[in-house]
Image (cartoon, rainbow, N blue to C red; front, side):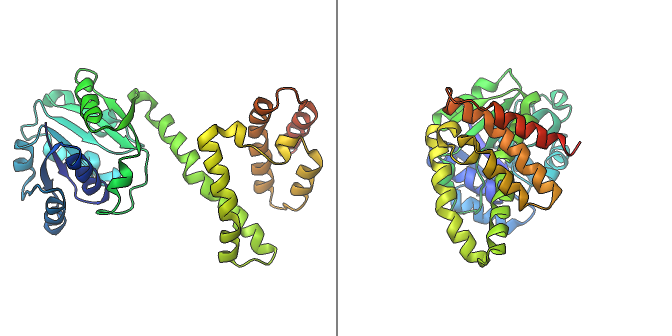
Length: 288
């Protein structure tokens, strides 16, 4: 299948390059910025197109790789063109294929979302890392096996999900990626209150964070768990809360500690955590 891209930014360039290096035929790129399209075409040994219609005519699969807020707008701009039988795809993690491409069935085309669980940071340097990303695929069931075969031929790991699961799937990614940054930021701020500079705080936390995350990813969160919750150490939790005057931070600490309890019980099935569970429930109830 010939694969074309509308949008020659970071995701379009990186995915196009990855697919071309895995033996897929990239027909080329269209972008409102002709320089971007020309650079992406040169990067992937394909063509730059002056009009979307020409790109569509030479493509069996069309990826709309533009910012999330523009995906449907771009689709609405091409749906009156002859796209019957085409596979129209986007790479957004937060939008389902059915929401991105409304009423696509009336065009005779097929809608898909192909999302890499990876933060693409550069147009020309990221594609080797993208090869190790896990992809999710959802969309029209009538031809989803064709899209799955494309990913298989490229040697990519992927999971087919239902479009109705897209928001829950994206939430999982946000928990594991974005929200952890808020916790790291809290740690840096607390060290700064102890006299660290921001740079020294980051350097101090880096081995702790990277080591623990590596352990969790290799062996699972329960086996990586250490600290006061894992020990059932109510005294230390109380000390932590005593130096946390902000009520939102106190609640955050309490709620996250409660979320760690099932991991602690899984790691230490013979340990009694009932006192700690009662304590955390009591602390959670104080805000209500």
